[in-house]
Amino acid sequence: MNLLQRKTAIITGTARGIGKAIAAEFALNGANVIITDLNIDDTVLEFVNELKKNGIKAKAYASNAASNEESEKLIEEILIDFDRIDILVNNAGITRDNLLMRMTEADWDAVITVNLKSVFNMTKAVQRTMLKQREGSIINMSSVVGIEGNAGQSNYAASKAGMIGFTKSIAQELGSRSIRCNAVAPGFIETEMTAKLPEDIRNAWINDIPLKRPGSPKDVADVCIFLASDLSQYVTGQVISVCGGMQL
Ligand code: NAI
Image (cartoon, rainbow, N blue to C red; front, side, top):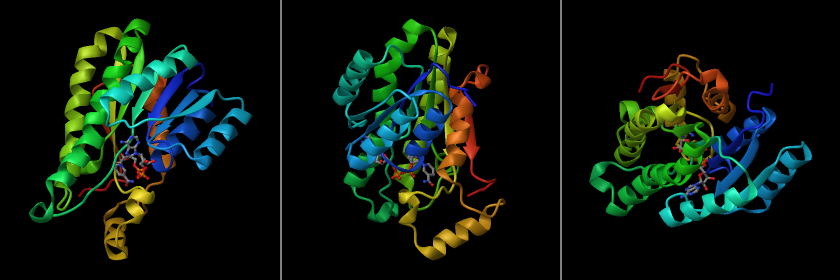
């Protein structure tokens, strides 16, 4: 399918996991793909070359989404290489799980800065371009934990709930210019982030999922294609869970 033909997409945290799957699926749908992550290593460059071989315009940029200055600079650089920015996926994220009793201020600050402030940084940086185009789709990678909360993840849950408030506000601010902003709330998706979970916790999670399996990065990417494409032209300010029916 070519649902994203002639669209240019920036995805943060694209070196692996869900971000990489989104880039791959967007490319399969004809989008130009801008890959950004903290470090651009050989594996990422190989991935970019694969996309290019398939006729996709793709480029990787090293940038820390948690830094306002780097985010502004990144968009300036991108606009030299690409004419437009149609889609922004704020995907970069980290966990520093602990019970509140043991959570340090550094754990709190790191998660809020990387997960939530990055969304402000990148959205603000692309805003002017999307306003000029009078078109755009912003997708924020939240989590079911941001909706339901989770013991041992108060910093992560707060950052992901904050993203939902931001999403709904930006949808209201920018809707009159046809710029849409939605959030995706994945459940338990198999990536390096969740590979850190102990086996018993992993099995308990799977057992509680009505579809009886963890999600794949592609499951999340497929919903992002819908939100990025013109199929969702009348959808904004929404949170779509991709969680196999899981309730925490
Ligand atoms: P991952 O840990 O496999 O990949 C995250 C990527 O973000 C890495 O490539 C990392 O280098 C990059 N990153 C981290 N800090 C960054 C920064 N400051 N600037 C730029 N890039 C940065 O994680 P995964 O599982 O692919 O998760 C992607 C997103 O989906 C995250 O926001 C995560 O919170 C969210 N999510 C994941 C779930 C899961 O089960 N895996 C469930 C719900 C939400």
